[in-house]
Amino acid sequence: MEYSENEMPYCVKNCKVKPVNGTIVYEMKGHYQTVNRLILNQAIEVSELVIELEQPRKNMPASLFEIEVH
Image 1: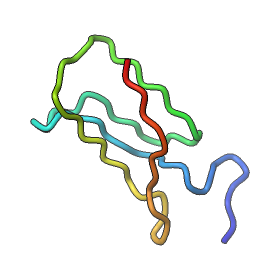
Image 2: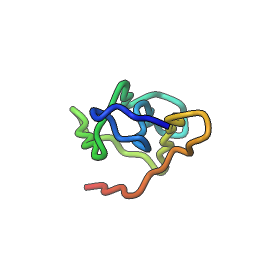
Image 3: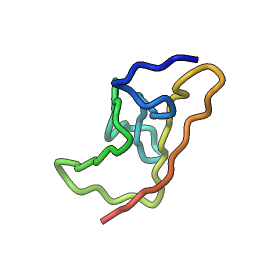
């Protein structure tokens, strides 16, 4: 398998972040770096967040290694 030098093979390019009610608070498309910093314009108060990661390639699992919430 060959990869472009400009993208990480296991990097998730597309994802959505939303509370359990389904309202999307953040959507990332076409991301190509290993770190993604999300800063919301307004603070939100939720008891639970759903992070949907799109699989980078057919036989490659999407992975999330760390989440920090401040």
